[in-house]
Image 1: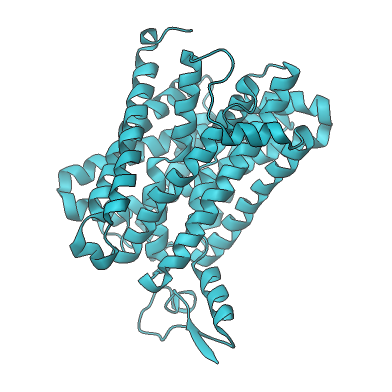
Image 2: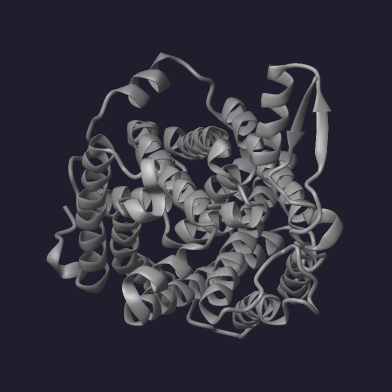
Length: 444
Protein backbone atom coordinates (compact mmCIF):
# COMPACT_ATOMS: atom_id res chain seq x y z
CA UNK A 1 0.00 0.00 0.00
CA UNK A 2 1.24 3.50 -0.87
CA UNK A 3 0.36 6.83 0.63
CA UNK A 4 -0.39 9.80 -1.59
CA UNK A 5 -0.02 13.34 -0.33
CA UNK A 6 -2.20 15.90 -2.05
CA UNK A 7 -0.64 19.02 -3.64
CA UNK A 8 -2.73 21.05 -1.18
CA UNK A 9 -1.46 21.34 2.36
CA UNK A 10 -4.63 21.06 4.41
CA UNK A 11 -6.03 23.96 2.40
CA UNK A 12 -9.63 22.93 2.51
CA UNK A 13 -9.68 22.42 6.22
CA UNK A 14 -7.56 25.37 7.39
CA UNK A 15 -7.71 28.16 4.81
CA UNK A 16 -4.12 27.90 3.67
CA UNK A 17 -2.40 27.06 6.95
CA UNK A 18 0.85 25.20 6.44
CA UNK A 19 1.36 23.84 9.95
CA UNK A 20 -1.28 21.14 9.59
CA UNK A 21 -0.01 17.86 8.07
CA UNK A 22 -1.20 17.29 4.49
CA UNK A 23 -4.12 15.05 3.68
CA UNK A 24 -3.05 11.48 3.01
CA UNK A 25 -4.88 9.06 0.73
CA UNK A 26 -3.99 5.37 0.86
CA UNK A 27 -3.82 3.65 -2.52
CA UNK A 28 -3.07 0.07 -3.48
CA UNK A 29 -0.93 0.37 -6.62
CA UNK A 30 1.23 2.70 -8.67
CA UNK A 31 -1.36 3.28 -11.37
CA UNK A 32 -3.95 4.24 -8.76
CA UNK A 33 -1.47 6.69 -7.25
CA UNK A 34 -0.76 8.15 -10.67
CA UNK A 35 -4.45 8.56 -11.49
CA UNK A 36 -5.19 10.22 -8.15
CA UNK A 37 -2.16 12.52 -8.46
CA UNK A 38 -3.21 13.56 -11.95
CA UNK A 39 -6.77 14.25 -10.83
CA UNK A 40 -5.49 16.49 -8.05
CA UNK A 41 -3.11 18.35 -10.37
CA UNK A 42 -5.65 18.52 -13.21
CA UNK A 43 -7.49 21.78 -13.78
CA UNK A 44 -5.37 24.87 -14.52
CA UNK A 45 -4.20 23.66 -17.96
CA UNK A 46 -7.70 22.76 -19.11
CA UNK A 47 -9.34 25.91 -17.73
CA UNK A 48 -6.78 28.34 -19.17
CA UNK A 49 -7.14 26.79 -22.64
CA UNK A 50 -10.92 26.42 -22.76
CA UNK A 51 -11.53 29.84 -21.20
CA UNK A 52 -9.54 31.32 -24.08
CA UNK A 53 -12.27 29.98 -26.38
CA UNK A 54 -14.35 32.87 -25.10
CA UNK A 55 -17.06 34.88 -26.84
CA UNK A 56 -14.55 36.59 -29.14
CA UNK A 57 -13.04 33.24 -30.11
CA UNK A 58 -16.47 31.80 -30.91
CA UNK A 59 -17.07 34.76 -33.21
CA UNK A 60 -13.64 34.42 -34.86
CA UNK A 61 -13.74 30.66 -35.48
CA UNK A 62 -17.32 30.59 -36.76
CA UNK A 63 -16.58 33.57 -39.00
CA UNK A 64 -13.57 31.73 -40.42
CA UNK A 65 -15.81 28.77 -41.26
CA UNK A 66 -18.53 30.97 -42.73
CA UNK A 67 -16.05 32.86 -44.95
CA UNK A 68 -13.64 30.11 -45.96
CA UNK A 69 -15.27 26.81 -45.09
CA UNK A 70 -12.81 24.19 -43.89
CA UNK A 71 -9.83 25.71 -45.73
CA UNK A 72 -8.27 27.14 -42.53
CA UNK A 73 -8.53 24.00 -40.39
CA UNK A 74 -4.83 23.36 -40.96
CA UNK A 75 -4.01 26.60 -39.14
CA UNK A 76 -5.66 25.34 -35.96
CA UNK A 77 -3.68 22.11 -36.09
CA UNK A 78 -0.49 24.14 -36.56
CA UNK A 79 -1.34 26.21 -33.50
CA UNK A 80 -1.69 23.16 -31.23
CA UNK A 81 2.03 22.97 -30.33
CA UNK A 82 2.16 26.75 -29.91
CA UNK A 83 -0.54 26.69 -27.25
CA UNK A 84 1.15 23.82 -25.45
CA UNK A 85 4.75 25.10 -25.47
CA UNK A 86 3.86 28.56 -24.15
CA UNK A 87 1.60 27.34 -21.37
CA UNK A 88 4.01 24.55 -20.42
CA UNK A 89 6.60 27.24 -19.71
CA UNK A 90 4.06 29.00 -17.50
CA UNK A 91 3.32 25.83 -15.51
CA UNK A 92 7.02 25.10 -15.07
CA UNK A 93 7.72 28.63 -13.85
CA UNK A 94 4.77 28.54 -11.44
CA UNK A 95 6.00 25.29 -9.90
CA UNK A 96 9.59 26.56 -9.63
CA UNK A 97 8.73 29.87 -7.95
CA UNK A 98 5.43 29.22 -6.18
CA UNK A 99 4.49 32.76 -7.22
CA UNK A 100 2.37 34.38 -9.90
CA UNK A 101 3.66 35.89 -13.14
CA UNK A 102 3.19 39.53 -12.08
CA UNK A 103 5.20 38.99 -8.88
CA UNK A 104 8.06 37.40 -10.82
CA UNK A 105 8.25 40.27 -13.34
CA UNK A 106 8.45 42.76 -10.47
CA UNK A 107 11.08 40.68 -8.71
CA UNK A 108 13.32 40.01 -11.71
CA UNK A 109 12.88 43.09 -13.93
CA UNK A 110 12.09 45.90 -11.49
CA UNK A 111 9.17 48.17 -10.72
CA UNK A 112 9.07 49.99 -14.06
CA UNK A 113 8.66 46.85 -16.16
CA UNK A 114 6.44 45.36 -13.49
CA UNK A 115 4.07 48.32 -13.61
CA UNK A 116 4.17 48.35 -17.41
CA UNK A 117 3.09 44.73 -17.64
CA UNK A 118 0.49 45.11 -14.87
CA UNK A 119 -1.16 48.23 -16.33
CA UNK A 120 -1.28 46.67 -19.80
CA UNK A 121 -2.75 43.48 -18.40
CA UNK A 122 -5.44 45.25 -16.37
CA UNK A 123 -6.44 47.50 -19.28
CA UNK A 124 -6.65 44.75 -21.90
CA UNK A 125 -8.42 42.45 -19.44
CA UNK A 126 -11.04 45.06 -18.59
CA UNK A 127 -11.83 45.85 -22.21
CA UNK A 128 -12.04 42.13 -22.96
CA UNK A 129 -14.48 41.72 -20.08
CA UNK A 130 -16.73 44.33 -21.67
CA UNK A 131 -16.87 42.24 -24.84
CA UNK A 132 -17.70 39.13 -22.80
CA UNK A 133 -20.67 40.82 -21.14
CA UNK A 134 -21.71 42.23 -24.52
CA UNK A 135 -21.85 38.65 -25.82
CA UNK A 136 -23.93 37.54 -22.81
CA UNK A 137 -26.33 40.42 -23.43
CA UNK A 138 -26.57 39.67 -27.15
CA UNK A 139 -27.08 35.92 -26.79
CA UNK A 140 -29.66 36.05 -24.01
CA UNK A 141 -31.51 38.86 -25.79
CA UNK A 142 -32.00 36.42 -28.66
CA UNK A 143 -33.58 34.06 -26.12
CA UNK A 144 -35.99 36.77 -25.00
CA UNK A 145 -34.18 37.80 -21.80
CA UNK A 146 -33.69 41.53 -21.27
CA UNK A 147 -30.05 42.69 -20.96
CA UNK A 148 -31.05 44.48 -17.74
CA UNK A 149 -31.86 41.07 -16.28
CA UNK A 150 -29.28 38.92 -18.07
CA UNK A 151 -26.16 41.01 -17.44
CA UNK A 152 -26.67 41.71 -13.70
CA UNK A 153 -27.66 38.08 -13.12
CA UNK A 154 -24.52 36.85 -14.88
CA UNK A 155 -22.39 39.31 -12.89
CA UNK A 156 -23.92 38.15 -9.60
CA UNK A 157 -23.35 34.49 -10.51
CA UNK A 158 -19.72 35.14 -11.40
CA UNK A 159 -19.14 36.86 -8.07
CA UNK A 160 -20.80 34.06 -6.10
CA UNK A 161 -18.62 31.57 -7.96
CA UNK A 162 -15.42 32.86 -6.35
CA UNK A 163 -16.31 34.21 -2.90
CA UNK A 164 -16.86 30.83 -1.25
CA UNK A 165 -13.30 30.65 0.11
CA UNK A 166 -12.49 27.43 -1.76
CA UNK A 167 -10.21 27.16 -4.77
CA UNK A 168 -11.24 23.54 -5.33
CA UNK A 169 -14.94 24.40 -5.38
CA UNK A 170 -14.33 27.12 -7.97
CA UNK A 171 -12.11 24.80 -10.01
CA UNK A 172 -14.60 21.92 -10.05
CA UNK A 173 -17.46 24.14 -11.19
CA UNK A 174 -15.29 25.77 -13.84
CA UNK A 175 -14.01 22.42 -15.15
CA UNK A 176 -17.63 21.25 -15.46
CA UNK A 177 -18.40 24.35 -17.54
CA UNK A 178 -15.34 23.58 -19.68
CA UNK A 179 -16.67 20.13 -20.53
CA UNK A 180 -19.86 21.73 -21.87
CA UNK A 181 -17.70 22.81 -24.82
CA UNK A 182 -17.86 19.20 -26.01
CA UNK A 183 -21.32 20.15 -27.27
CA UNK A 184 -19.54 21.87 -30.16
CA UNK A 185 -18.45 18.41 -31.32
CA UNK A 186 -22.08 17.26 -31.45
CA UNK A 187 -23.09 20.42 -33.33
CA UNK A 188 -20.27 19.91 -35.84
CA UNK A 189 -21.49 16.38 -36.52
CA UNK A 190 -25.05 17.65 -37.00
CA UNK A 191 -24.14 20.45 -39.40
CA UNK A 192 -21.05 19.03 -41.09
CA UNK A 193 -20.51 15.25 -41.29
CA UNK A 194 -16.82 14.36 -41.10
CA UNK A 195 -15.20 13.11 -44.28
CA UNK A 196 -12.04 13.04 -46.41
CA UNK A 197 -12.35 16.75 -47.23
CA UNK A 198 -12.18 17.73 -43.57
CA UNK A 199 -9.10 15.55 -42.99
CA UNK A 200 -7.43 16.90 -46.13
CA UNK A 201 -8.03 20.55 -45.19
CA UNK A 202 -6.81 19.92 -41.64
CA UNK A 203 -3.55 18.34 -42.79
CA UNK A 204 -2.74 20.40 -45.89
CA UNK A 205 -1.71 24.07 -45.53
CA UNK A 206 -3.39 26.10 -48.25
CA UNK A 207 -4.63 29.53 -49.24
CA UNK A 208 -8.45 29.58 -49.53
CA UNK A 209 -10.12 30.34 -52.87
CA UNK A 210 -9.85 34.05 -53.59
CA UNK A 211 -6.18 34.34 -52.74
CA UNK A 212 -4.29 36.32 -50.12
CA UNK A 213 -6.59 39.25 -49.40
CA UNK A 214 -6.47 41.78 -46.56
CA UNK A 215 -9.57 40.23 -44.99
CA UNK A 216 -7.91 36.79 -45.02
CA UNK A 217 -4.72 38.15 -43.43
CA UNK A 218 -6.76 39.93 -40.76
CA UNK A 219 -8.75 36.78 -39.98
CA UNK A 220 -5.64 34.58 -39.82
CA UNK A 221 -4.03 36.99 -37.37
CA UNK A 222 -7.27 37.04 -35.40
CA UNK A 223 -7.21 33.23 -35.17
CA UNK A 224 -3.62 33.29 -33.95
CA UNK A 225 -4.49 36.03 -31.48
CA UNK A 226 -7.32 34.00 -29.96
CA UNK A 227 -4.98 31.04 -29.44
CA UNK A 228 -2.82 32.68 -26.79
CA UNK A 229 -3.65 35.85 -24.84
CA UNK A 230 -1.52 37.76 -22.30
CA UNK A 231 -3.92 37.02 -19.43
CA UNK A 232 -3.35 33.28 -19.89
CA UNK A 233 0.28 33.60 -18.76
CA UNK A 234 -0.72 35.35 -15.54
CA UNK A 235 -3.75 33.12 -14.92
CA UNK A 236 -2.15 29.68 -15.19
CA UNK A 237 0.95 30.58 -13.21
CA UNK A 238 -1.23 31.95 -10.39
CA UNK A 239 -3.39 28.80 -10.52
CA UNK A 240 -0.32 26.59 -10.24
CA UNK A 241 0.96 28.66 -7.31
CA UNK A 242 -2.50 28.52 -5.70
CA UNK A 243 -2.51 24.72 -5.88
CA UNK A 244 1.06 24.58 -4.49
CA UNK A 245 2.20 22.12 -7.11
CA UNK A 246 5.74 20.70 -6.83
CA UNK A 247 8.28 19.48 -9.37
CA UNK A 248 7.08 15.94 -8.68
CA UNK A 249 3.76 17.12 -10.17
CA UNK A 250 5.35 18.63 -13.29
CA UNK A 251 4.68 15.72 -15.63
CA UNK A 252 1.02 15.77 -14.62
CA UNK A 253 0.83 19.56 -15.04
CA UNK A 254 2.27 19.08 -18.52
CA UNK A 255 -0.34 16.41 -19.27
CA UNK A 256 -3.07 18.71 -17.98
CA UNK A 257 -1.79 21.48 -20.27
CA UNK A 258 -1.55 19.16 -23.27
CA UNK A 259 -5.09 17.88 -22.73
CA UNK A 260 -6.28 21.46 -22.48
CA UNK A 261 -4.50 22.39 -25.71
CA UNK A 262 -6.03 19.43 -27.57
CA UNK A 263 -9.44 20.14 -26.08
CA UNK A 264 -9.47 23.77 -27.14
CA UNK A 265 -8.21 23.07 -30.68
CA UNK A 266 -10.86 20.37 -31.17
CA UNK A 267 -13.59 22.74 -29.95
CA UNK A 268 -12.25 25.54 -32.16
CA UNK A 269 -12.22 23.23 -35.18
CA UNK A 270 -15.82 22.25 -34.48
CA UNK A 271 -16.80 25.92 -34.28
CA UNK A 272 -15.23 26.39 -37.70
CA UNK A 273 -17.17 23.39 -39.03
CA UNK A 274 -20.41 24.87 -37.68
CA UNK A 275 -19.58 28.10 -39.50
CA UNK A 276 -18.92 26.05 -42.63
CA UNK A 277 -22.59 25.05 -42.61
CA UNK A 278 -23.32 28.65 -43.63
CA UNK A 279 -20.43 28.76 -46.11
CA UNK A 280 -21.67 25.69 -47.95
CA UNK A 281 -25.20 27.14 -48.10
CA UNK A 282 -24.05 30.68 -48.99
CA UNK A 283 -25.87 32.13 -45.98
CA UNK A 284 -24.45 35.40 -44.53
CA UNK A 285 -24.39 36.43 -40.87
CA UNK A 286 -23.03 39.35 -38.88
CA UNK A 287 -22.42 37.85 -35.42
CA UNK A 288 -22.68 34.49 -33.62
CA UNK A 289 -26.15 35.32 -32.26
CA UNK A 290 -27.48 35.88 -35.76
CA UNK A 291 -25.61 32.78 -36.91
CA UNK A 292 -27.52 30.80 -34.29
CA UNK A 293 -30.79 32.15 -35.66
CA UNK A 294 -29.87 31.22 -39.23
CA UNK A 295 -28.73 27.73 -38.24
CA UNK A 296 -31.91 27.35 -36.23
CA UNK A 297 -33.84 27.63 -39.47
CA UNK A 298 -31.83 24.69 -40.80
CA UNK A 299 -31.68 22.43 -37.74
CA UNK A 300 -34.53 23.67 -35.56
CA UNK A 301 -35.01 25.84 -32.46
CA UNK A 302 -33.10 23.47 -30.15
CA UNK A 303 -29.90 23.92 -32.15
CA UNK A 304 -30.40 27.70 -32.06
CA UNK A 305 -30.83 27.70 -28.28
CA UNK A 306 -27.81 25.42 -27.77
CA UNK A 307 -25.53 27.70 -29.80
CA UNK A 308 -26.70 30.78 -27.90
CA UNK A 309 -26.18 29.07 -24.55
CA UNK A 310 -22.71 27.93 -25.64
CA UNK A 311 -21.95 31.59 -26.37
CA UNK A 312 -23.00 32.47 -22.82
CA UNK A 313 -20.93 29.61 -21.40
CA UNK A 314 -17.87 30.76 -23.36
CA UNK A 315 -18.32 34.32 -22.08
CA UNK A 316 -18.77 33.14 -18.48
CA UNK A 317 -15.59 31.03 -18.62
CA UNK A 318 -13.65 33.88 -20.17
CA UNK A 319 -14.97 36.38 -17.63
CA UNK A 320 -14.10 34.41 -14.49
CA UNK A 321 -10.62 33.49 -15.75
CA UNK A 322 -9.76 37.00 -16.98
CA UNK A 323 -11.07 38.69 -13.83
CA UNK A 324 -9.12 36.29 -11.63
CA UNK A 325 -5.93 36.89 -13.61
CA UNK A 326 -6.35 40.64 -12.88
CA UNK A 327 -7.12 40.08 -9.20
CA UNK A 328 -4.22 37.66 -8.72
CA UNK A 329 -1.76 39.94 -10.53
CA UNK A 330 -2.79 43.06 -8.62
CA UNK A 331 -2.79 41.23 -5.29
CA UNK A 332 0.68 39.79 -5.95
CA UNK A 333 2.12 43.21 -6.78
CA UNK A 334 0.48 44.98 -3.83
CA UNK A 335 1.51 42.23 -1.43
CA UNK A 336 -2.11 41.57 -0.42
CA UNK A 337 -3.46 38.15 0.55
CA UNK A 338 -4.59 36.81 -2.83
CA UNK A 339 -6.02 33.32 -2.63
CA UNK A 340 -9.34 31.70 -3.40
CA UNK A 341 -8.67 29.64 -0.28
CA UNK A 342 -9.16 32.75 1.84
CA UNK A 343 -12.50 34.31 2.74
CA UNK A 344 -13.54 37.80 1.70
CA UNK A 345 -12.65 39.01 5.20
CA UNK A 346 -9.15 37.51 4.95
CA UNK A 347 -8.40 38.82 1.42
CA UNK A 348 -10.60 41.90 0.92
CA UNK A 349 -8.40 43.60 -1.65
CA UNK A 350 -8.12 40.51 -3.85
CA UNK A 351 -11.87 39.98 -3.96
CA UNK A 352 -12.52 43.72 -4.36
CA UNK A 353 -10.47 43.80 -7.58
CA UNK A 354 -12.35 40.78 -8.93
CA UNK A 355 -15.77 42.23 -8.06
CA UNK A 356 -14.83 45.68 -9.38
CA UNK A 357 -13.76 44.21 -12.73
CA UNK A 358 -17.01 42.27 -13.04
CA UNK A 359 -19.37 45.07 -11.98
CA UNK A 360 -17.69 47.86 -13.96
CA UNK A 361 -17.57 45.86 -17.20
CA UNK A 362 -21.17 44.71 -16.77
CA UNK A 363 -22.31 48.26 -16.03
CA UNK A 364 -20.58 49.65 -19.11
CA UNK A 365 -22.38 47.18 -21.35
CA UNK A 366 -25.74 48.42 -20.03
CA UNK A 367 -25.00 52.05 -20.94
CA UNK A 368 -27.11 52.98 -24.00
CA UNK A 369 -25.04 53.47 -27.13
CA UNK A 370 -21.80 52.51 -25.39
CA UNK A 371 -18.91 52.41 -27.95
CA UNK A 372 -18.61 48.62 -27.86
CA UNK A 373 -17.16 48.36 -31.38
CA UNK A 374 -14.44 50.85 -30.49
CA UNK A 375 -13.66 48.82 -27.37
CA UNK A 376 -13.44 45.60 -29.39
CA UNK A 377 -10.97 47.21 -31.82
CA UNK A 378 -9.00 48.64 -28.91
CA UNK A 379 -8.71 45.17 -27.37
CA UNK A 380 -7.22 43.82 -30.58
CA UNK A 381 -4.60 46.57 -30.77
CA UNK A 382 -3.63 46.52 -27.10
CA UNK A 383 -3.43 42.73 -26.97
CA UNK A 384 -1.28 42.80 -30.10
CA UNK A 385 1.09 45.28 -28.49
CA UNK A 386 1.28 43.46 -25.15
CA UNK A 387 1.52 39.81 -26.18
CA UNK A 388 5.11 39.79 -27.52
CA UNK A 389 6.52 41.61 -24.47
CA UNK A 390 4.63 39.30 -22.09
CA UNK A 391 6.03 36.21 -23.78
CA UNK A 392 9.55 37.67 -23.87
CA UNK A 393 9.39 38.18 -20.10
CA UNK A 394 8.31 34.56 -19.80
CA UNK A 395 11.15 33.31 -21.98
CA UNK A 396 13.76 35.29 -20.06
CA UNK A 397 12.44 33.97 -16.75
CA UNK A 398 12.58 30.40 -18.08
CA UNK A 399 16.30 30.86 -18.78
CA UNK A 400 17.03 31.99 -15.21
CA UNK A 401 18.96 29.06 -13.76
CA UNK A 402 18.75 30.53 -10.27
CA UNK A 403 14.97 30.19 -10.42
CA UNK A 404 14.54 26.86 -12.19
CA UNK A 405 17.76 24.93 -11.62
CA UNK A 406 17.75 21.80 -13.79
CA UNK A 407 14.29 22.70 -15.12
CA UNK A 408 15.64 25.72 -16.97
CA UNK A 409 14.95 25.84 -20.72
CA UNK A 410 17.04 23.55 -22.87
CA UNK A 411 18.60 24.74 -26.11
CA UNK A 412 15.82 22.98 -28.01
CA UNK A 413 13.23 24.76 -25.85
CA UNK A 414 14.80 28.09 -26.66
CA UNK A 415 14.91 27.48 -30.41
CA UNK A 416 11.24 26.51 -30.47
CA UNK A 417 10.13 29.28 -28.12
CA UNK A 418 12.06 32.10 -29.79
CA UNK A 419 10.66 30.97 -33.15
CA UNK A 420 7.15 31.22 -31.70
CA UNK A 421 7.92 34.61 -30.15
CA UNK A 422 9.29 36.06 -33.40
CA UNK A 423 6.28 34.78 -35.36
CA UNK A 424 3.80 36.15 -32.80
CA UNK A 425 5.65 39.45 -32.67
CA UNK A 426 5.47 39.85 -36.46
CA UNK A 427 1.80 38.89 -36.59
CA UNK A 428 0.94 41.19 -33.69
CA UNK A 429 2.62 44.14 -35.40
CA UNK A 430 0.72 43.42 -38.62
CA UNK A 431 -2.55 43.20 -36.66
CA UNK A 432 -1.93 46.50 -34.87
CA UNK A 433 -0.94 48.22 -38.11
CA UNK A 434 -3.95 46.87 -39.98
CA UNK A 435 -6.37 48.08 -37.32
CA UNK A 436 -4.74 51.50 -36.89
CA UNK A 437 -4.09 52.16 -40.59
CA UNK A 438 -6.32 49.91 -42.73
CA UNK A 439 -5.45 51.93 -45.86
CA UNK A 440 -2.03 50.26 -45.77
CA UNK A 441 -3.67 46.99 -46.77
CA UNK A 442 -5.63 46.92 -50.05
CA UNK A 443 -8.96 45.09 -49.99
CA UNK A 444 -7.78 42.52 -52.50
